[in-house]
Image: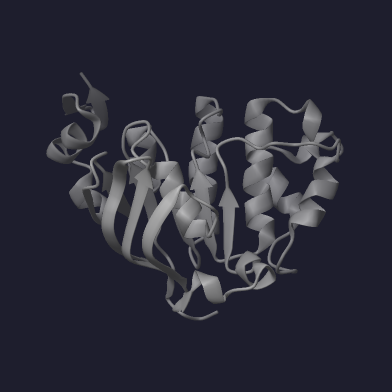
Amino acid sequence: MTNAVLAETRGLTLWAGERCLVRGLDWRVQRGERWCVIGRNAVGKSTLLRALAGLPVARREGEVAWLGRPQRDWSPADAAAVRAFMPQQASDRFALSVERLLELSVAVPGQRSAARTLSQLDADALAQRSVLELSGGERQRVALAQCALQGAPLLLLDEPVAFQDPAHQQQVAQWLVGEFAADALVVTAHDVNWIARIATHVLALFGDGHWRLGPAAELIEQRTLEGVYGCAWQQAGGAWLAR
């Protein structure tokens, strides 16, 4: 898997009922890039990640390809080796230990150590705990470990720090930046300052089908933020503040 372009959308259009969320998206995600998808609630961020992962969505047109091949041409096993998807919240049915869950998550063996990954995420003490006993933040960090240990070079993470306290938000940011330099990330998040910390690129969704994409340094700016979130923004002390 040496292809620099891990995922590509061609004319991708997504709907929620009769409302167009994303219209005609042409987009490439390459190795070494960390994309953050930004937008208000219900503009289609999660739907876009599901489409990018090859999971069912209400209605879509256009094409998504991995490594230059359309999604429909990939078997489930081969798809698991190219992309890992983390939903906003895990739905666990069985009282598996974290250690066993991580063992079952591996699609490409030998990519990462489970013990080291848990330690990097301040989750090593959770290895023998049942996933049903974890707090929201603990389960979220375990889900991040699952994606890492799957071994896929494309990670699709839906709000990976939504349940994290500030210290763990910072820890996850450092881990994402430091651990996946040879891979590609597509992440949704709401904290603009956290996004600015990790993103190399941004895809902004405006909620009416329109979108804008480019380097984070160009898109994390006042006009774009105000258009995306519908409120005023200012920068103070190096941080972005909604007002």
